[in-house]
Structures are given as C-alpha cells and as structure tokens.
Length: 102
Image (cartoon, rainbow, N blue to C red):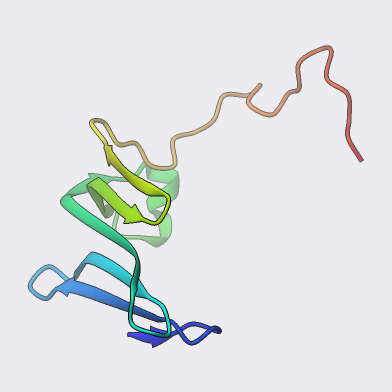
C-alpha cells in the first residue's frame, strides 16, 4: 500500500504464484472505499518482432477489467489483443479540411 498526496491509501492485491496484479483499492483519509479496479483472465500475448527486441517477446495482460467508484461501474472484456502493431503510413495524416490548432 501507499498513501497519496491527500492522505488516502492505495492497496494492491497480487497473485503470488503468477506475480500478476489482481486488484487496486483506493480509500480516502477516513478509510472510506473510493474506487476499486479488478483485473482478471490474464493471458500471455506475443509481441511483434520489432517490439520484442528488448523484451522476452511476450507480455502478460488482463483480458477482463472492471471498476467501481462514485461515478458508477464499468467492465471491459478484450477478445482479441494485439500489442504494438505497426500503424499504417497515413495514421497521423490529418484529413484535408483539418485546421492546425495552436
């Protein structure tokens, strides 16, 4: 756990055998639960060759994320995960009518 700059507390839950993060819990100074993030259904995904140069060529990533806080809840389930795939040449080409902003 660690305290944030306002005195709140963040607690992390890890799965020891796999060394994966399972949950994050944030509480305020009074100990009231502010936000929970849960990470489940981890998988091992292969990285593209150019991204694997300084890694083992694989990444462990959760396929299911869920969160609950004062504003509500959300859930994300990833069916097909690709990491660091090359972008097409025109990925950052603005449309013809785009106007540069300051």
